[in-house]
Amino acid sequence: MDKKRNHTNKFQFVVDATDWSAHAGKLSTPHGVVETPAFVPVGTQATVKSLSPDDLENVNTQLVLANTYHLYLQPGPEAINRLGGLHQMMRWDKPLMTDSGGFQVFSLGWALEHDVGKLVSIFADDSREEVSVREYEKKGKALIKREKLCVVDDEGATFRSHLDGTLHRWTAEKSMDVQHILGADLVFALDECTSPVHDEAYTRLSMKRSHLWEERSLVRFKELNKKSEQSIYSIVQGGPFEKLRKKSAQFVAGKDFFGTGIGGALVSKSKMGEILDWIMPIVPENRPNHLLGIGDVDDVFLGVDKGIDTFDCAFPTRIARRGDLLMMPEDGGTCANHWRLHITRHEFRDDPAPICRSCHCELCQSTYSRGYINHLFWARELLAYRLATIHNLWVMNMLFTEIREGIASHSLNRVRERWMG
Ligand SMILES: [Zn+2]
Image (cartoon, rainbow, N blue to C red):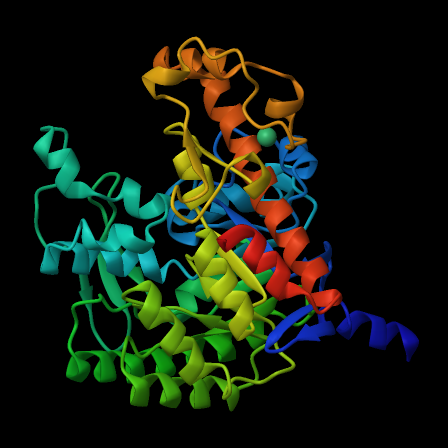
């Protein structure tokens, strides 16, 4: 009896403390417990670029998200299966999540359809960077001709690989099958991603389709997940339209999902707050809430305030690789400078000062000078990418530690003021 209870209790979400609508809690998985709110770095290709699993642990990473689309194409689920699954392959024995692959499949389609390559970068992640076919074309390196890369029908989507142009079929069942083989603790149902420029009529149609796909995802998930080794998140769709968002929130609330994902076009920072205000009173309180693709400091405070528990975003790691280092308030990070220091700027060329005096990450503790890191970036030395990524993830995790402590002591306001000014 007890054994059975333990078995089903491998996944659990418990809220320990609240501060207004913000909550701090514990998200338990078979690979460990995630203290929430938590930041989730993106390991697109089963690695957070330039970091080893030890590096990730040393910066206090609790949970990593890998991209199903990329791993499906390369090295492929069969290879990953032979290598023991995602945890075993990447030597990460802590909690893992995978997305449904839908975002990348559809963003190929609508990025070309609406010519919104620049627009999507508002809330961009690594994968969007990598599938920018148009950029490859400009450089004359495109492997595939410019044509619609994704065709959606009610059953699923047919798309061309951005790597070699081969044709693939993506459905709810396929996404679940692949995510089951990858074996992450937390997986996502397949939804159709709409673009910020889709109108209400199309977004409604697409939302209905998403709901059907999410139901099918749940059925397949239950067939595959007899041993309760994975848990599944729904996705609330509906674009920037109040009626649709509320309808979608009601739909997912009525289904047997473990967690609630909030996706789709969030359009702008102010609209994001509005959308969360519509959704959050409807989604079940006892489920963890995940906001997809959001990770700017001000967006994090907004999300936490509305009751978001986990945030995945490639932004801190991506900006690290171009020399933008995140700064805590005591080191000069403010709303105005977006908590960033552009280490590649000329003024740092012979600056002997350390990067941040109050940061305890490997980069800052090694007392490398700003001048040296500036040089490494200009020389395109690989160490620069690793150290900068370590630093940015450390700062993000410090921010979330402060947020959790703030919620626990009912002083989240003070933490927000400290960071936002
Ligand atoms: Zn640091």
